[in-house]
Amino acid sequence: MKYLTFWFDPISPYAHLAFERLPQILEGVSITVTYRPVLFAGLLAHWGQKGPAEIEPKRAWTFRQVHWLAHRHGIELQTPAQHPFNPLAHLRLLLACAPEGGTPNRRVCEAVLHHVWHGGADANDADRIKALARELAPRVDPADPAVKQALKDATAEALALGIFGVPTVEVDGRLFWGLDGLEMLSGYLRGEPWFDSGAWDAEGAARPSIRRNA
Image (cartoon, rainbow, N blue to C red; front, side, top):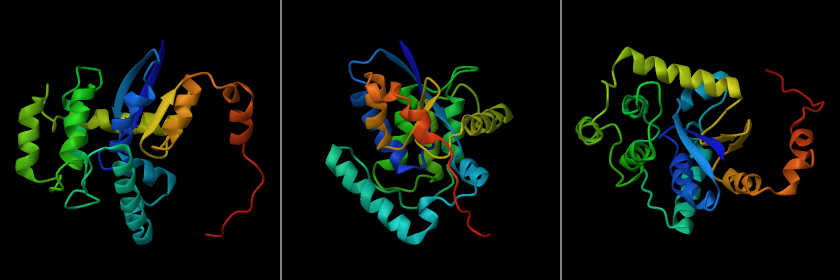
């Protein structure tokens, strides 16, 4: 039995696509999955990056690509009316639905991701969020300081692991980033020899390089 952690932020269309694809990738593998909400903006700020939607040509490419990928894999996806948006309400709701000291289950994560990526409505519409909260019946108030702290702690934990983007899957101390990283994850879980060849460490090692001037 292996233990896999799926780190995600509902703001990411790739997180939605990877969430939907994950059961197929894990088919036939004995594994336990934990879902960990994390603040993508916190990761970006720490590593000094901009989000894909903050760079206009990259934003255009991202949404063309994710819609093509959704079409290719048969996954429902409609871009919300506003994007990027502030995902704090969604992240806190996810954590408020988790058992004390635990993490949200797949059903809760699915409901939040579908709220954002199905229908093309405003993900932060107050009435929609209230309706979602009624449906999910969180254990505690999402505005509870303990929930806010749990999100900060999760983001700090992700950074300590070296996570720089979402979705990221962690298993056995190895990180697999992005939707396209799921195929690599599948190879690892199924024992492809490459992962025991030393290539993982060798190709991830730092090399001499030139540095950009600030």
